[in-house]
View 1 (cartoon, rainbow, N blue to C red):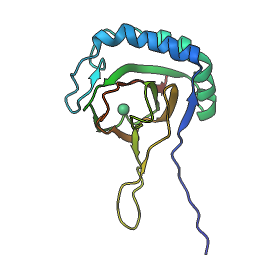
View 2: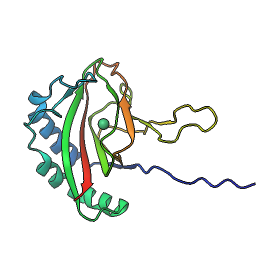
View 3: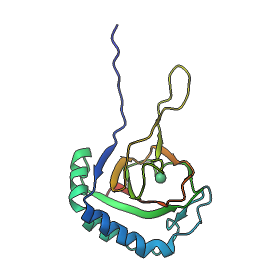
Length: 177
Ligand SMILES: [Fe+2]
């Protein structure tokens, strides 16, 4: 009796250099004043709904090499970053399960993250346990400075931040032009 496991969901992880981490942290400090508690479903300070977001070009410039590697790894022809936003999680902040659309890939970059205090993003497999029907989840091992790519359609969430230490991320969506 053979088992053939078909279909899989790719995750691409890379660690940014200190120099790139510092550049993105500077963008975050400039943006912090625009991060507001305005998400209708979650408790998180975000600029997702704010029009004061002019850092896509800076991100493309800082991440140029990493993005080219990623694009060739997953097979993009004419990728474009369609949206970017930042979020900060003070104690008690969380994100309910959501996805970033039906096509393309999305990225999460961990701007402020302490693995001893914080949890990474939790991803929910589109394929449930075939016997029990339970959700299958994946919680990648990340650190401050980790850049993580995943298919945009994938449901994910963040548990409440139980720490007094700030957790902060940059996120963006990449679609084929
Ligand atoms: Fe998300």
